[in-house]
Amino acid sequence: MRKCNAFACFAVLYLCLPCLAQKRHWSRPCGDYDTQSEMNQCAQDKAAAADTKLNEAYGELLAKLKDDAFTRSKVVAAEKAWIAYRDADLAASWPLRPKEDPLLTYGSAHPLCYYTALAEITNQRTSVIQEWMTPREGDICSTQLARCGTPSPKASAGN
Image 1 (cartoon, rainbow, N blue to C red):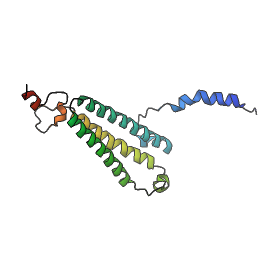
Image 2 (tube, rainbow, N blue to C red; image 1 turned 180 degrees about the vertical axis):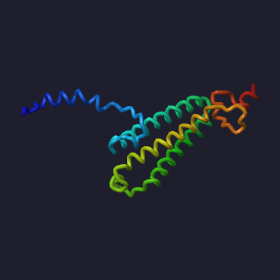
Image 3 (cartoon, rainbow, N blue to C red; image 1 turned 90 degrees about the vertical axis):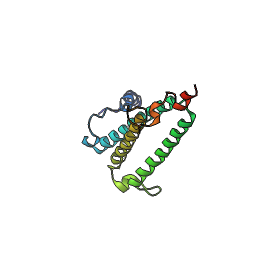
Image 4 (tube, rainbow, N blue to C red; image 1 turned 135 degrees about the vertical axis):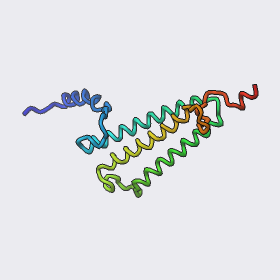
């Protein structure tokens, strides 16, 4: 049996790293994969994707509110409060004492459960923000944020 010299091993590893670093496209529900490691990674990637969508929607809303500092400040405050709520809600679902290992406390499926719940709550928040930006004709309860980018009735009345 031949020994692999250090340079050859390093070269093979170096060439394979980009393949390992690429995110996998998860086409099935995370619980349908064969190994716990795959399930956990799937859930983590889906939570990250949900967070990206949330940040895009939030950025779009803030951009539409660029000329309305008052409403923008309310949206920023609401988002900060939602993040605190999200974190507290997840912590209440899987309570941990300081320095406690979630894998020892809840088992190897904990990342699957945690990241699935994180993705769910994040997707719900994204829907709320997108709804704020979507005017609904005839809905008297539709949020004023749906009209962002259009002059408010008070601003128009002063003309």
